[in-house]
Image (cartoon, rainbow, N blue to C red; front, top):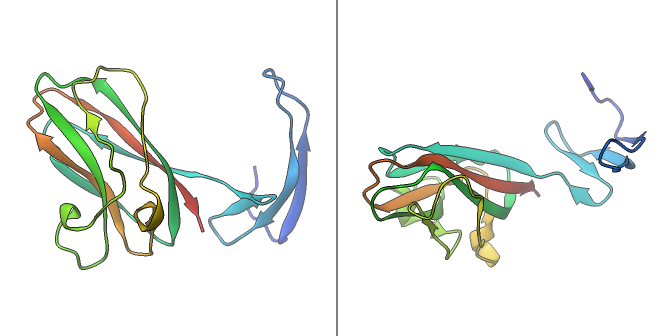
Length: 158
C-alpha cells in the first residue's frame, strides 16, 4: 500500500501467491489517478446498479478520456416481464442518453436469468471512446417489475 508516489517509475516484485501467480514489473505513474504496468494500463471498473424503477441511468461522467474495453451485466434477480437495456454515451449538452451514441449494438435481456455474468460486445471506433465530460449509462426498453442487478463498464484511461 502506498500513501503517496513521488517517483515517476518504480519496480515491484512479489513471490507467487496461492494461485501460483507472481507479480513483477516496472510501474510508471501517469498522473494522480493512473498507474501503468509496463505498456499496459490498468482497467477502471465502473459499476452501476439498477432496480425495477430504473428506466434510464447515466451515472458516470468521464473525468478524462477512456476507452471502453468491455461491458458485463449481471442480474441478481431476473425480470418477470420483457425488458432490455441498451448502452449509451452522451456528450456534455446532449439532452438525454438515448440522444447520444450507442456504445454497444448488443442488449442485456433482463429476463435472461440471474447470477450469470453476461458479456456485452462494445462497438468499435468512436462509440468505444469517452471524452472528458461524456456521460455513460443505459436505457431500458419495456417494463421491469422485479429485476435488479449491476452493469460494469471496464474503462482504460488514455
